Length: 157
Image (cartoon, rainbow, N blue to C red):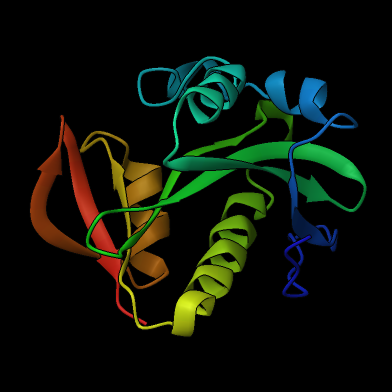
């Protein structure tokens, strides 16, 4: 379990846990709001399959207290940078600070891996204003690069 003691705005303790036999179905069923489906998969199940079919990504279940409320994945690029991807907070759980607590928790954990010092990157679609605002508020800055049709941003620890 990855736990930095962060809570959402409702006071629920947000942790990141491995996806396993006890929670994979709940994670697979995580679905964003309909208006977000242009930027993220309709179900987190797509990201679970991606992590099963790739050596790059690792999926994590996002918990608020003891309830699965989202999915996030992370990976390491060839240059040593750490990447966040596949962040989906269930539609019923949004606007409560779960996404912010998830990103902060994963960033803090990744920053301490392998001696730290590696940039942490992610990408988002330019039309996804809520994502842009969240990542900017957490200190991510544009790199000038694009990944497919998404803006790449990074945080330097």
